[in-house]
Image (cartoon, rainbow, N blue to C red; front, side, top):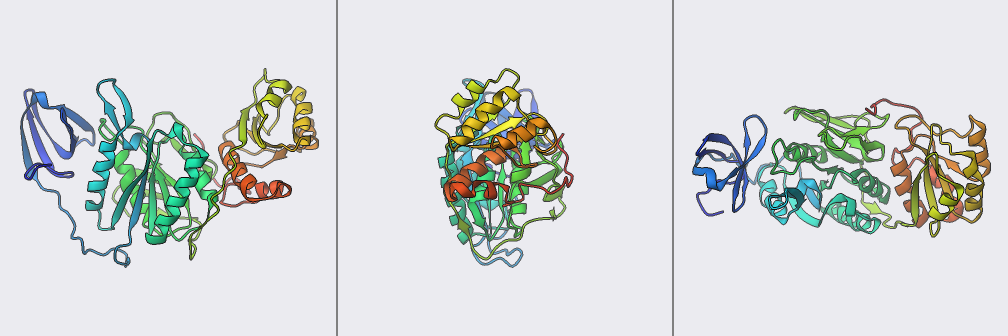
Amino acid sequence: MASGEPEFGDSISVETDSGTYSGIFVHQEPDFIFIKLGSGYNTGISRSRIRKVKLVQKRNVPEETTKVDGRKDGKGIAILSTGGTISSRVDYSTGGVKPSSTMDRLYSEELSRMHTVPVHYSSVSNILSENMTPELWVELARSIKKSLDREEGVVVFHGTDTMSYTSSAVAFMLREQTGTVVFTGSQRSPDRPSSDAFVNIESSIRFASIRMGEVGICMHGSLSDDDSVLLRSVRARKMHSSRRDAFRSIEFPPIGEIKGNSEPVVTSFLPAGESNRIMDKLDPDVGMLYFNPTLSGEDTERFVEGKKAVVIMGTGLGHVAERIIPSIEKITRSGVKVVMTSQCIGGIVDLNVYSTGKRLIKAGALGLGNILPEVAYVKAMFVLANYGSDEFEDMMRTNMRGEILERNLGGGFS
């Protein structure tokens, strides 16, 4: 921006042909100026309607020499952007939302100026989360490890739709870590009314500033902007397509919570280590199959062709129709691993209760208690790539990152 123009965080008033709007300047584009109103909503104002923009008050920028929590000079929080809604903007030619380098530049220029903790921003990729792949998970894990080697903590911007997959994969690959890794996103792009992006970013930076050995997801804990939570990645799931509090921790309480401007409260977290170590291999030859009443044995056999393992989301305690069990036995005898999980949100897989489950055990299927299906899917990729075939069952049953619970510790799922 030219000298004298408002900058991110400044208080401004915008006089238009239909009234005056007052709020916090967010950013501008050739045809629009975006501000955050006093109500907390963001709004975009067309330049064709604007008569005058007045700077009311400059944002108070902390001195660069400010030190927080005894941090070493230069050490702070690394922000790695992968894309997603949090790094997107509305394309007014189509009305859709798309990844935007404009938002990357905004974050890069402004985030470090908003905090007493040094914030170092970089872009790893710029894609919507449905385009994430295991290869990109590995690249991201390597970037996180490098960032932790020089920073106190890491925040990852990511699309919400596959965030639980990516963050769980990173959790398994990151075998030891010196600081907290927080994934965050938004349900509305930063230039949309009532965007949740800025609250999620602020809360994530605050959580990442606390030294833990966790890989977590930070999003809204309720519909209110005054409530943010940090959830363990391997117990988290997106439960709603559009609500800002879409993520829930399944049968495990949040690791942390922030209420308004109060300090973060964290409990029951894994301790940080003395070094950063990753096992950066994943085997993508894993499939996930959702059982349904018309699924046949032939369908199942075709699905697993070319795969080394398959995670089946069964009914209830982890069941499938009896007609499919002979095919599962044929599959396991061929060397393909079969893991049973449940379509239910809560509860466990127990193959020892009904005769169907006992037949599945005999057929070679592996039940994994209360592990989430998506987590079992990425864990199978990790185990296949890093351990021998004869170790698969033992390693899948090993509780590596808090993904398997001995009992329901609360946290809900609705």
